[in-house]
Length: 262
Image 1 (spheres, rainbow, N blue to C red):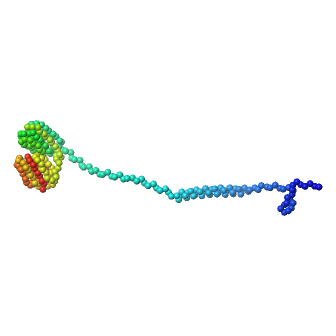
Image 2: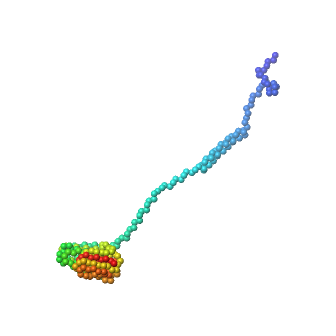
Image 3: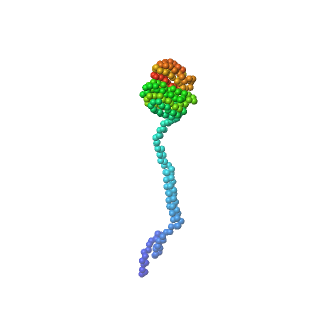
């Protein structure tokens, strides 16, 4: 009796008895071209995804609403400083201020090169009080007793005062000033005693009055006055005279006076 093989027979798909040995299964090999194709597809998908992501970011950045521009800072305008108009400087005085004083009779040398105002005062004088110059004005003051008044000097051409002679029996003072110290007068003017004034309005006649007992004189220096002597009377006076303004005017009076332009 013949012994059977240890290997069990198997049915073949067609019912035939298979061989006594079963052939081992072989491992399938992928073709190299197929693997390369898969790797290429994966790499292409990654590249396309990266490109699409970058394009989306670019589009998002392009379509995003830009931030609003910052408003310019608001500043309060500084008000302009008011314009200050500087008046022109006053002309320099032509005559320097000079003061002299003494008691009793005296002679004073002075340096006056232009028209000027002289103020003479002797409050305690009791006898003859005299002020004379070596210029054209000559006898300026000639009174009895106390005196105080103003006068113009050097108002005539080629006649400058360089010396004063004083006769007094008490303390006296003599002051010399430039014409610029006289304030201008608008409209009527009035005063007491010997005075100097500047009437700055334009006029051709004026009403003049005086209340006094001694000599009364009005003299005007200015364009339009042919002669400076306007009034020369003794005692009280009232009248209308020809006098042209503007002008420098001197009044010699022992009382109250007035000049009213018309």
